[in-house]
Image (cartoon, rainbow, N blue to C red; front, side, top):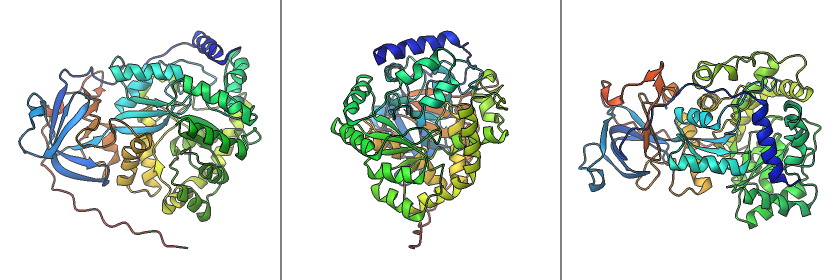
Length: 496
């Protein structure tokens, strides 16, 4: 059976097998008007990783048109702009979640429910996430969603996407997805996932991904479970070379330090997940850093999996705000008859939890670029809420908050070579902005409560307590803070 037809059949079968649940509204309808000025804000310069200002930021349609000192004469393009007095507030570029799966419920695998992708997209935007990188799904379906968010038919972030994971015959994600899927989907999974057994298989799987309008290629270079097949280094290297010949970057799922070193040195462009299985030595971290390959650590997903293994997972306050109760109500305990592959994975991940903070410190000290991503929507790991938690986990691991925000804004935009540029607040860039009441470098929790969210020029704000939040201009603004002192010079890590 042709893979594309099989994917359609699998999608319709899944929809027929699972009840649909939806959360309540999280965002107000976009405000009228396509030109805005945010006046008097301290602005995050993501290139310098520091707040500057106060500034007046003008937008028109989907673009930023001017960034001026507060009170400077308005540009001609700002004559009709709707004014928002955000004196004493903080203005950031929209955030980026660099590892998501837009299509998914985050519910317990043994409690199958379906959540509309539109709900997930709204959850991302509610968290101030205006761009996502989807790293594995049905490419044509993801492209359709990307077009809808671009046009404004759906309120959500900009979507870049891969197609399905490319893996070894019988490799991840086939064992886990097959065990967790209901009949008859579990019988179709091995035939739907693109697999490479030899070099002659590579052109076909790349053809499929490009036909599905993939922005980049996703490949698995890890074993899940630990005895599952994995691509050889030779096949990975050849796949990367052929993808590059076609103008496509390659994202690799890795698990061990050796996986990460080999994938980076094979020319992979982005490492999906940090090193979560083994310790990272300083020598290995330096080898990865030498390639310049960024890594999305996704600490939050491993913390979630470990909590399942330890039987300690509970929904957070943000989880309860962002998703419907049906998505988490049966996740607190893994039943004794849960699939063996899942039980092994959760217990193994729980044992490895002690490795993650030291690994982050070692990789960061060596200069490996660490991005912010979540792997939502996996069970217990929800759109929007998970990224806000990931920011905290990375700062708690010792990465300065300014660098974490830079990794959640500018760095992914540079990698994807975005046009218009996002992740920055400067003329010509995409009008993706969030307004917070406090300085997130001092209080990351202020990102939980954005005042305004602007996505490609469309202005919205959170809905709270079942009603609309009053406009920020109705709030009594605090005093404008003094311009921040220049950031302290960063000391280099001592040489070994």
